[in-house]
Structures are given as C-alpha cells and as structure tokens.
Image 1 (cartoon, helix red, strand yellow):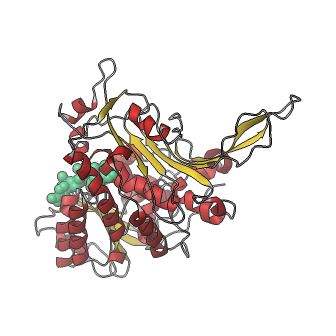
Image 2 (cartoon, helix red, strand yellow; image 1 turned 90 degrees about the vertical axis):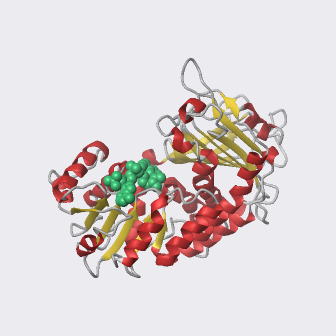
Length: 484
Ligand code: NAP
C-alpha cells in the first residue's frame, strides 16, 4: 500500500539560490517527487533566481541534470521529467542589486499561494527580505523559507530575526530544521501522545535517564573551513539535537498545532539548566594509518573546534527533576547511528531468586539507519531449565511493518516544502525558540573558550573520547553501544 497524498493548492515558489547545491540536491528533486506522487499540481510554478545568467531553457537543462543525479528511483511516468520542466522558469538577479526584481514579480500570479525559499547563505537573508518587500514581490500573505544556520550565537540570531520581522510577520516565516521533517521524529510525537501506554511512565518517577545519540561516520573533508567556524555544538546540538530533546521532554500540547507544539518546546528550552564544564566532553577525531585528522581537514593545526560533543543536560521542571538527558554527537565515529533511548528504571524488587538483577526496559526510537522503534523487555528464556530470564527486543522497523509506504515516503525536505504550501508551521522553528536555544548554548561555548579548553583526540571509528564514557560511568550508567 502506497502512502496517500493529498494534493496541495497550486502555488508559485521562488528559489533564491536556484542554481546552488541545496536546490540541486534537495529542493528541486524533492518537488519533482511530490509532483510524481500527485501532490504538487501541474499548474504550480517554480522560479529559480540567482546571479548566474541563464534563460528559462538553460535552467530547465540544469534541473534535468540535477534530477538525473539526485531524484533517485522515483516512481514516475515517462513524460514526468518534461512535465516538471515546463513548470520551471528563471530570473537572473543579484540580491544586492535592483535589477531583476521587476521581472521576477511579473512572473508571479496573483491569488495563488506564493512562497520564497532563501536557499543562500544567511548573510543574504536580510537583504533578500528588504528587496522582496521594496519591489513588492511579496505581500502580507506570502511565505518565506529560511535555511539553517540561523545565527552563530544569540546576538546574530536576534539580528536576523529583527531583519526578517521588519519585513514579514512571524506567521509568514518558516525556519527549516530538516530533522523535524524526518518521519521518526514526528513519530516520537505519535508514540508519546497517540498511545495511552507510555505517557503515564514518561517522567522522572519511571525514567532513569534518556540518551540522545547522533553519530556519523563521515568526516568534514571538503567543508572543513566552514565546519571549523561552527563545530558540533553549533552545527548539531543547538538545532537538531535540541529539537529531539524538546519533543522528548515536552508536556503534551493541547492540540497538534503550530503554536501549541512550539509553546511546549519553548518551555523545555527555558527549563534547561546551565551546563557546568564537568558535564561537557569535547573531542576531535585523530588519525589512523595516514588518514587525515580533524585539524588537517579544518586546515588549522591549532584548531580547538570540536567534532564530537557529549553533555549531561538537566531539565529543571517537575516532570524531569533528577532524570538527566545525556546527548552526544560526533563525526568519524564507528557507525552512522541516530537514536533516542528512554531508559526506564529497574523493577523495584526482584521475585526471581538466583537471577541476575534485571535491567529496566528501554524504548529506542531509531532515526537512522532502519527508522523504527524497539522496546526491550524481559521474558522467560525458552526451555525446561526453570525460571531463567532474558531480554528481547520487541522490534518494529518501519520498512518491514509498513512496506511500500516507507519505500515511497517523502524525505524531510519534500514534506517540509509541502507544509510551507499548506501553511502549516508546526514543524518549523519559531523565532523565540531559536533565540532561547542560543541563549542556553552561548554560555557553554563561552565557558570553554574562556578556559582555553582543548578537545581530546579520539580514535576514528570509535565511539568518541574516553571522557565521554566517564560522563555516564561516574553516574553508574553506560552509553548504549554505537553500532549499525
Ligand atoms: P551554494 O551551493 O553556495 O549556493 C548558493 C546559491 O546562492 C547559488 O545559487 C548562488 O548562485 C546564489 N547566490 C549567491 N550569492 C548571490 C547573490 N548575491 N544574489 C543572488 N544569488 C546569489 O549553497 P548551498 O549549499 O545551496 O546552501 C544554501 C543554504 O542552505 C545555506 O544557508 C546553507 O547553509 C544551507 N544548507 C545547505 C545544505 C546542502 O545540502 N547544500 C544543507 C543544509 C543547509 P550564483 O552564484 O549564481 O549567484
């Protein structure tokens, strides 16, 4: 059974930065797949804009190549690519100039949904917002989509928010964090709030601790200079991991709606305790057998930027007091593994004499690979050997359970772009949320900068620096193994 798709209303989507990497890899192939799935109407229009001097035909050829490279195995009829190309147009313009905006406006239709995707570096966001309004390309009903990174710290995020809000209302601004478009991340809300089973146990009384891991095998080669200015905290924790933590820790919203969900997430961020230096472990991947180390990729032998970060985080509210959240993320680790693990408390008393103490149940929500959910439970070991206990996973891999529905599942970008067209902001970050996240992160970064903290080296293909293991060991706990 293939997932049902409800067609969206027709729209005009402008992609500023239409010739860039993100447009080529994600946005344009994503739109193509939505058209093939019957969700994007044939009357929709997509207009690329950037400085490169292309005409409509040249842009269509550019997109044809992008689709052949990045559209993957899309189930589509033979003429689909040509049909998609007829929806495309292009306007050359430099964001800092005044030429081109009138031509862009003339290509847009009145009375259809209008969205502008800022698929460019954040230093251009303010100028684009000003030009769009000055040249009346957008009006009070238009939507804008902005990419991460949203600021480098609280000050730059506030500045960016102020620049956008000078031209657009908050309900017109869609700040993308593509993690929120992932199927499993949304499933976290479905599991928590669509089942009566878990919610009564979802608190400090029953949960011992929570582990959030986003591990990658890739290094930063090719984008080392860029990455070196951000590091794991800014690149991964302030946005993606923060969102996972919020969805995991938040109170049930009164309904699944943009402000109800985002209000609850914001409360979690505001309840995060400051993190002291002893609860933070930073690392840089080293080298094995001639493979370049982090500092080689960064192009700076003295770089103090972290490619690995582990932290113990406390949420200071009634639900979570005393139940820590341990988070870790890193490049060049043993396996690509992203998961949230809810580790429940041990049974209060064992009635099975002579059996090793039982571990508490663990609920694992896997983001990658093999998106799915596992619940570890204790059962009797089969056979006549008396009452011997063992642990087994109750495993639900989406691909197995849902078959074709998963094979043709939209990727995060596809889903989020369609949400923009539908006018649904639930899976987009609100301005105050982004600022609150920076307000929590900034002092942690400032503290290690003030102390001149140097990240510990860790073995490539391991699970991070030794000290990150100690972060849990000293609390009598251990990380779940990083493995595929
Ligand atoms: P990119 O490959 O460098 O593309 C930038 C685009 O902006 C190009 O189309 C460029 O085209 C256009 N541009 C630059 N200056 C311009 C100007 N003054 N006026 C008009 N157009 C201009 O960057 P990208 O990788 O696509 O990234 C775009 C944004 O998405 C960034 O904020 C990035 O952090 C974010 N992002 C990207 C990815 C990804 O997978 N690539 C993933 C997550 C987030 P011309 O040179 O023709 O003007």
